[in-house]
Picture: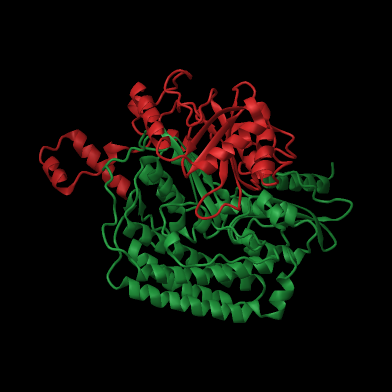
Length: 247
Length: 391
């Protein structure tokens, strides 16, 4: 773990030293000027993305500043990330992964670029459509949401398009948007309980029928021939099962 | 409670359960019209609920989700190469284009760059996906307005494009051909000449559609001045692609997106816009874009560089920790993937930004005040694919 972080840091330093992204640095300066201490973290991938992490109380003001001072009139998307490692694993090697592990923030809890303090992080991408010459002019806003109070001010008064994105985020992650005109289910039935994109929400299809994994892979023809010779009762059962599956 | 009352209540309950929105079926002022989810004009299973005053819509709501497949959740239990199989099915008329931004995001995280030949072939298939997709749109557009001929022409000529895509990838609808670091295979022999002939056909088809539809009096009457979206509203709702260029915004991610894994920068082409912002403008921009895409394919076929089609990539793909966002100009508009990797075989989180989702989210705003027959032309001209809304 320690190696990975130092590698990451070294790579970041390497990325930033040769080329300075003037556009994105300039944008970051404008946002820092507008928001002051509310900018709690930032990261620039030169030529690619500018991440700005703001305090939760300044979420709306950050979007407003991006819109008014940087000309970000295009609302691209809004979503969230649940940084908790999935207690269900990736469902592939059931012997190792399955079983609910208690959530431990200090474990392998990495919170991505521009940092983060909490499990849930909100993400919003805004762009200026006057960017030219292959240079994208955009900003990725992030903010942290404390576990016990998943509330944030809605961006709908600024961007009409935030309406559906916030509805989706509400049903998928359980984030409440204050001032949203109607938080109701978008994709899921209205009686649906739970927030499917949270990491602790199990993927039910995989619980009902585990991922076949490596054990179900058919042996190569040559290997199969070799195994036919010393056929035991177990092997015969296995073969019968295999045939049954195919039919 | 009388039988009719009970029936009425059961009916209302059933409707509400189905609708997932609390729709008052009868109001004092007017009636509620339910379009879909199985209406031909919704291209799938989109449901539009409109409250009417006479022939005019006073309030409208759109109910998606009948085809929600949860790709963002499913992607978390797949490996990186497996995800392309899922995302192929988002915009199923231009499948190859769905794979490209995801692969580019993974390449960004791995700091791999595809070789020039792979980039060019990628761009060819990307633009052919656009041609296949929008060809069908142009035909369907006629069908929505009662003109049956264009849709037959569209299916006839799209077939040739699909044949060419199949010849390379083996799949007509779901190529699953893009790989991290390059492509699965090179082009087959004789493919380039055939493709150029097909592109010639498509240009002829565009001319036919222009003569059949765009000069047609009925078509003009039904689309001119209908469903007008001002540029600033379009942008605040996140409209992209031809839907925003039809409102006069000169913005195309192929030119302005800073995308490095495709070859659009090497080509001579033009971004078409139309200042009107109405249904006609959106359709007209798409027609021009199809022509432009066929020219791009021609140029790419002529200037195809040699060399390998695959960069050096480890056999088992582990993507280093990091976050990346790549957005490309897909047939329906801007499509982006926000990929979070924790250094594992599979992504930790994938946020899929699909074009139709944002394009359709403007409908409650846009449908207010229009007449019932215009709902159909507005839906058609915004052009969405259900898989691209529901994901």
